[in-house]
Every structure is written in structure tokens, then in C-alpha cells.
Image: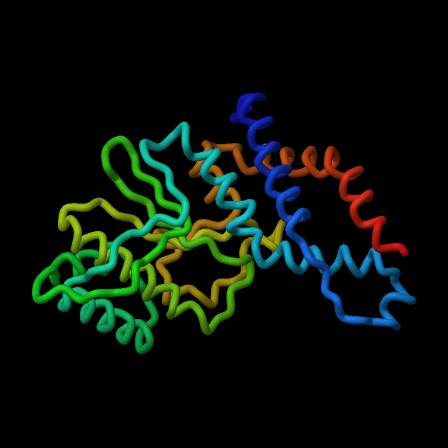
Length: 257
């Protein structure tokens, strides 16, 4: 067992608190759907609407606080919605553009080499940017930083270039603050919708260095909490769901009228 019972209970509390908060603030769609209501029932339609609403905020309302709870005992600094900074060297920003342009022609990312290129361009004036926020920021006792951007399980192909630019800019901003920073910038995808098959969104291969810029499902959660965390986390969700079911049933029963 990776997680102690106390930590499991804490994670279940985080899940239940987040879901209860979502229920308290949830406002069902007011659209009249007479055919749907008569075919499926207002309660099922209300639940469907709630699930859709929940999906759009799952990252910030549930995944982020759970990630904080898992990572806090293992990392020296753990912060959600961390502001990396708002300035970058002009030459470094230009280097980011050069890397992106190169990858559109020859999509074969090598993150280690890209970071070397960014470090070699820490000169010129500093440009002001919109403050860059990281979904999850971790720092080890040795000062190594991990900056995560949490994404949905099935990102659009057209977004990969934008993701890559964000990861490179985060690194450039971090180096502008401290040229000796040990920084890792990554995309985290909380679960694999293709299980038990491998994650299939490999169209991002080339634009992203899959070994150094992407963590999916157990890779991500086990990194935060230790090997085996992912499976125990799924158990926490299942148990929290069982405990919340009476409250959920009571809540959506209101829509049967």
C-alpha cells in the first residue's frame, strides 16, 4: 500500500468536498427540452447536464486539489495556479519562435537540446508578457522544478503547437529569472481513455518530446505520490462515489417533478 489510510481518507474528503461544492453552485440549464424530458426524465437530463458541467472544471475543482494532497509530503514546494513570471529575454523569446518554426517543418522534438538553445539565448532586453500561470508547480528539496499543464484526455491536434510554445515559454521565463534554474515543463493528462490499450494521442509525437514533456495516467499520479498511487487513487474515487451516492440521488430527485 502506497498511501496510508489517513492520506486515503484525506483524498476522499478532497473529492467529496469538491463535488459537494460543485453541487451547491450548480445551476441546471434552463432550456426547455420537452422531447428529452418526456423520453428520459428531467432528473436524468439534469444529471447529464451536471456531468457536462463537471467535465469542464474537473481539472481545477478536483484534479488540482488531489494533486496538491498527493505531492505535498514528497516535494519541498507544491502550488496550484503558480505564477512563473511575466518577463523573458528578447533573444530567448525569439529562440522559442525558431524552435516552433523548426518543428513545424521537421517534427522531431528533443527537449534537452531545446533547453540548451534557450539557455544560450539569455540576453537582450526583457519583454513583458502576460503573467504565466502553471496548473501545478513542484519543487524538490534540491531545487529542481516541475511545471505541469493539466489537459483533457483527448486534446485537439491543432492545440499541440500551442502547448509546445507554452512549455518553452515557461522554461524561458524561469531561465530569465534564474539562468541556473533546473526546470522541467510538462503536459499532464490525468487518465488514459483508451485503457487497456496504450494512450493513442500520438499525433502529438514530434511536436512534443513524449519522454520528457508528457505524463499520462499512472505516470503522472505515481510521480506525485509514489509507484502504485494511481490504482489507489481510483479506489478513493470509487469509495467517495459510493459514500456520496445517497446525497446525489436526493439532489437529482428534485428534478423528477
